Length: 343
Ligand code: G3I
Image 1: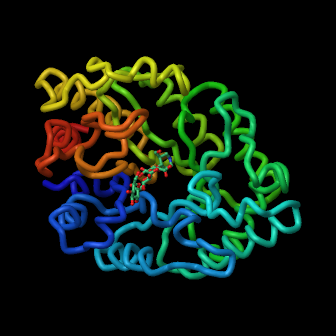
Image 2: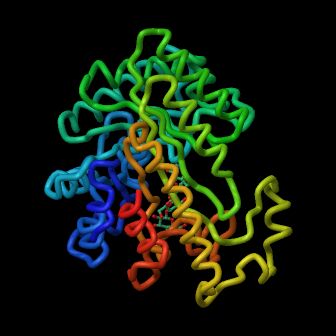
């Protein structure tokens, strides 16, 4: 049984696709993607610095390949991401006031959404606009337009393609203060009569956090706003967690410290089992709330190409995903397929 078949009629099962995967659609990795997943998200190539590198230049070639791959394989295709302060096209930063920025954002959003009208099923309209305390992050968008840039972005997207699902996507959305901030932000958009269809809770999680209780409460809180909940960017790090440390502290603690890369060759069976159980517990929750969950997307297929090998420091050997470095399914994969037989 494949993963997508196991979860059919529950929610979409997605994966991120890296640039090399999109550039070589005849690889073993892409056939695995087509076999096991029924939804895709571009890990990098649809970010503004790649898709819209100059104000008057859009560069759709690679993302067209990505979208065609999804269409051919009958997948639910997600667009990531229209407005984000990071991996931002440099020309955006030159916008000095509200009018200049509005013109730029409107053109950016409308041109891209229009280009994929009828092909892309949902968009991350705005990504990571919140600070950890729930206030809005300082960004070139906030600095020029103010907090209205959020409803404006959603409005321009929905005007262009009224049928595409529009999401707000962020990490740590299970944390209390950030969750409050996200709820406030979503309500502000709704109160203006602007369409927002869902929230993407990025699942860059760990073996021990966030707790199942806060994940469940978050699903309930967001669903109570009348929107869909997608679990996006799911991966579970099995390595020591630098949570709460910042900048220099991280490098101090991590540098030349083998303890921070404890499994350079292989993951011990005991941790392999812990990871499988953690995935199982989380997916049990997702199945319990399947009426509220539209999609669960992993941030990649195999441990070989996960961004977590390089975060928060380069060159660790992490094991967060369902397939190992040889593309063989891990215990966690089998556990998730089995789980649907009893739930
Ligand atoms: O492509 C270049 C390559 O040519 C160069 O040799 C190499 C040297 O470092 O860099 C490569 O670019 C990297 C790119 O990923 C492609 O692998 C960038 O340095 C690296 O910064 C970039 O990281 C991406 C990151 O977003 C950037 O913020 C990760 O792949 C991607 O997984 C990650 O995804 C984000 C989501 O979009 C938003 N939520 C958080 C998530 C994790 O950070």
